[in-house]
Length: 81
Length: 151
Image 1 (cartoon, one colour):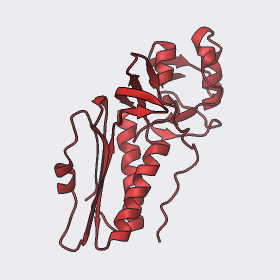
Image 2 (cartoon, one colour; image 1 turned 135 degrees about the horizontal axis):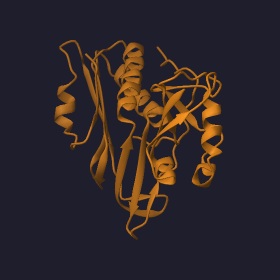
Image 3 (cartoon, chains in turn orange, red; image 1 turned 30 degrees about the vertical axis):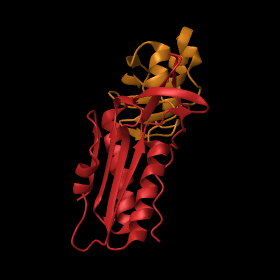
Image 4 (cartoon, chains in turn orange, purple; image 1 turned 180 degrees about the horizontal axis):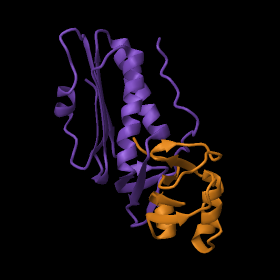
């Protein structure tokens, strides 16, 4: 299944991109997605093992199952205000 | 009617105050977050705010709804600016009106604190020596959103 993955702020600077399509087997979870990203090597290995994640714009637990077409954002520590 | 927005243009305090207020309200409260010229002992020349804009609008609406229901007023407005800001410019505005002041103070405080905890917005500071850094922020909780204290 295809997952649209978004990166912001420091993660975007780190990876040099704000968006990536990631292909994962059915039944994959949020943490499987993060593992798949980190296993790409290079700058990806610098991503935290358990970053805050939003699935379809809602903060979501790492154990949550993903579905084809989900939009998953890796959320660095926030600093609004 | 509550009001939320993520904006690119300068925030006008008079406009924000105009979004709230009602004949039954005896208190109107406006909080402004402003870019300051220093942070952690370093001289700051300006900042840039980035946002996951669509989600930020949604999360800001959730925060405002929580505060509004706890304070029993729907006269609540919250705006966050994104893009490049100079020292002295307004980054965030929260306005609340209610029959009595206690509800306005509680709602205003709740909204700004929750913005800092969970609004998907990031700040990059530009220092006077030319260096730039993302400001160390807070990690949002992935458990369900807290409810505002209804006291």
